[in-house]
Image (cartoon, rainbow, N blue to C red; front, top):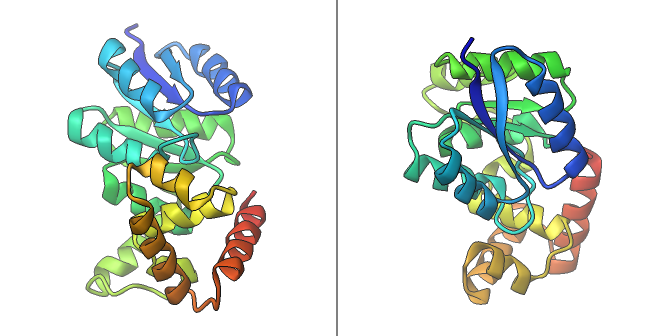
Length: 216
């Protein structure tokens, strides 16, 4: 049986090695390469030409959403599955818009992750039933946003900056990660603060940290 080749991208060695071991036990799947960050992932995709990329969102350096956009631009025929701890109600639609074919929480059983991998390799899309219902409701309501998290009003870039702030990165580090000027990152931070109705940058930092701790 031909085994479909998968590239794993995760900055936690235990997670990526454990998942690789489980996938390699499947008769129709094999992990052809493992990357710890977005830069490694782009190099390994060019070298190994996988049939699917499975990536986390929280990566050191460039974040997973940027990796999805880069992969979609350079390798549009390679599907992407996002495997993350982050709230699917906040991220699933965003990663699909960025070019991924699926989103699944790390808390799901490994057998379900394998099921998602097979679904996407077969040309399908994978999201949870709850997210599927939300997307259908948005379609029915002419794309009018449903009431949800306050973070829904943030743009993709603003949400990425928000997560970086919650991870303890300063403005210079965020600017370097996204190849932006410090002034541009400051503007994003101010927009985030205004949209979330927070009075100061320190209040934003506390909110971002507490939010990520609540997701973990």
